[in-house]
Length: 243
Length: 221
Length: 54
Image (cartoon, chains in turn green, orange, blue):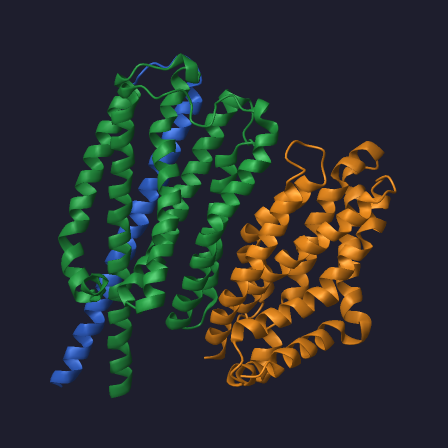
């Protein structure tokens, strides 16, 4: 099944129409989610009033922070075992985009925290800390790839690090939860919050799905750019060889 | 396959790390220096120092492990020793593990051994707890060295790899640092923290050698 | 017509502005990067074909 995707030409044909479709779906879903989230749904007094509307950008970002790292690790695994070039291109392209959504999650979480918890940064919040370490994992991955002198080495080193990071993520989350459970009285919002009402659920799901489509579209566009770069390099090498 | 190459890698790394005693003194100096800077930065209030002391020592231990590990595999890739290790037929993971363990013995264990002294400077009461804490620093330091070793192996061919090692290894240090610091408090959950610390160290010992081996094969290419 | 928030309006708008702003910049950078890559490839391959013909 993986081999079917492993062919760069097939990927180029697929992404040629799939990426625009992703963008259109993303625009529709995010647009509807924002309209619902900002104008239509009632505010929730339990969650501090209108401030809870921030979840329509914060929760999708948090979901993508986790999902993108897992996708990057999965692609690294596929590359490491089967050496399918497209998988490595995918892992390389996911990293900067995952870092962007992780940063959005941290920034919006911090701004949400100020009126809710009274502080910009809550060390006692397990989710906040986990996402911060996620951000460091992305940065380390990108820095490691950038410092390797050949593409093959960057791919191998990146794959090893992404897999090591991925198997550590559950342990990091567990330890952070243990760390933060000591100070639970400090947090106003409970871990899962009150049962979420259906009025919020659909706009939230639409936003999360929309962000996922936007992410998928951007990953494909970056992968296409990477494949074009490689074709350029190949053409230039041929030109050099012919003198 | 004979285990001889593993022992010789261990001896070579131990000699390298020990380097006539200076090898152990440098990380000790770094560890003590980093810890001593703290009261200068945050003031000398005994209650504050007593509260932050154990945590400061964890931070200093993590930082000094990063400083020592920078060259652990770099010298081997430069002089070709790495290719020889890989050709001996002994598992690369065992060789990498032996070298890392040797560096912990020469540089990490001394840090744990002087931790009671530094703890006293941080106004801790002199008690048997300090010895127990020293054992925890030793155990946690082992996990730091193994995860740091993964970073060192990955950046073995990178010039100025030290900064890269820090960025790679710090997220991996998180569980050990949390469990270790928690074990030295009276907070609820601190009873089981040493067990979790031991588990996270065992996890590092089980996983890191294979990651180091894969990274070293990459460095040798 | 902007919605009227009870309080913390600045915080709410800041969050949505950060989300929209950073995603907009990301989309812009990715698009420009892809266009530049495609243009460079087209040029390089055209030169390669030109040399072949000559």
